Length: 113
Image (cartoon, rainbow, N blue to C red; front, side, top):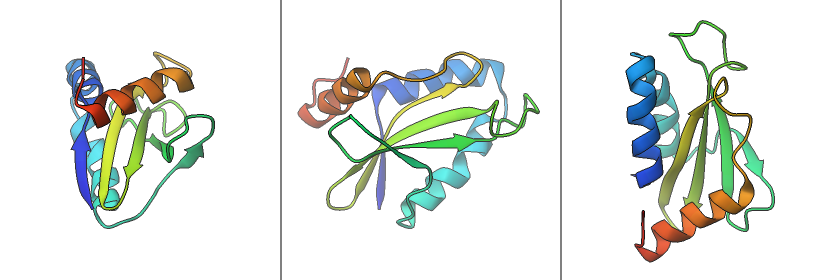
């Protein structure tokens, strides 16, 4: 599987990396799992695309997975994965499905923000 990054994901990762030094190391095991074809996390319903949310432990905050990061990704047929967004659970509870749908569609049509 080839892993791609949305503009939103890159922007949020950069913003979070200013607060959490080890975020890239925390996210790397998920990226490796996706590259090998695994689909960690839970399916997000209502998006209209095969989208998953995975909980990631934040080693800088020391609160485990429940207070860590949330990474949302889309399985692009046949062999790609799009990392749509990432956020800290302490910053937001959830991402609305209409926003996820819009971010995915912007990437698919090449009209990113």
